[in-house]
Length: 216
Image 1 (cartoon, rainbow, N blue to C red):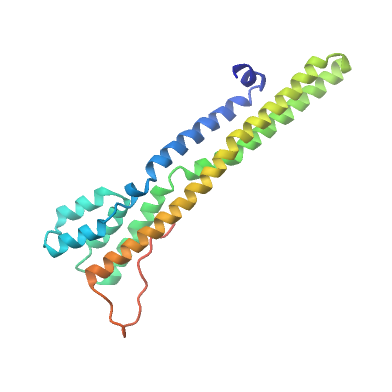
Image 2 (image 1 turned 180 degrees about the vertical axis):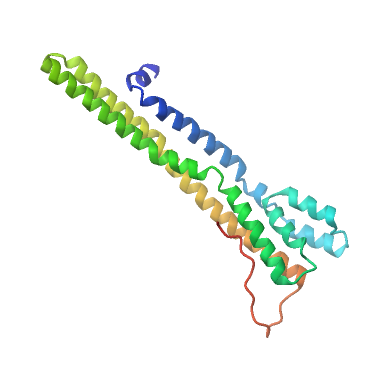
């Protein structure tokens, strides 16, 4: 394996660096985007239990805020519970934008790695072909070893770039989809909490827009 990397030339250095970065991001995001960590089950039910027991004080709200990303969103609404529904909704949306930004952390970097890894492989291919033609021009077909070395560099770097890029693209799309799914569920939980805290809307009342956890 080391011989293959060395034979690929200096372009293999950046490709290997991209692979390390991509692997680190993938492992970190898999760990950080666990659903039970982002959206703890029964959190809204627990809030309602504290509300009925008159235990929903600043200490409980701070505990909710520190518990999870969903807790941050819900706590921002609970901090404005004494205000109108619209104020509560705006507070939830503002915090939601920050939470979504945190959920998408490092995904742009992963997308960049997925984009540049094949380009680095292509660069190695071009350099390998240039090396091959230089050997052909200088020594003709006699130096077949130099020509074979140039072809080897071209093939190794191309394959390495694709090996790094393909998983990076797959996981980048997967994490984007997972973040979207988590955002939808957080919106549903926020809507549920607002309805519980403010009671059911009257049927004849105009329907108000529900709080949304939106992307920046």
